[in-house]
Image 1: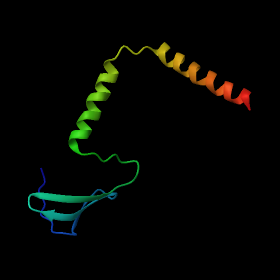
Image 2 (image 1 turned 120 degrees about the vertical axis):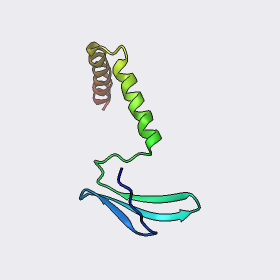
Image 3 (image 1 turned 45 degrees about the vertical axis):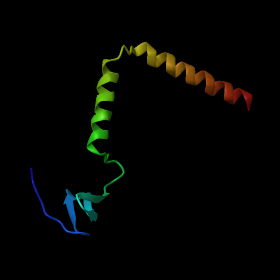
Image 4 (image 1 turned 180 degrees about the vertical axis):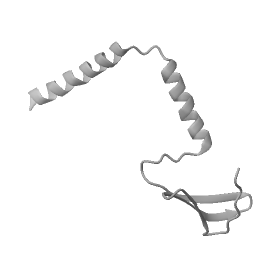
Length: 86
């Protein structure tokens, strides 16, 4: 693990695209500002872990390829009905 010391309003660059700025320091809490491209997901670690667990659960579900076809057909029927009503 790399450990860096930064003061208020100083920043750290990760690659060329991600900048982490120290916004505020109060007691044992540090507020960070993160500048990153929109295509880079930025989450608190606990949220990231929740998303990861949900994705694992989805993979383990009883999903069958036919389920996707049925879902697609359902939405297409609704779309065709809307176009017909115009």
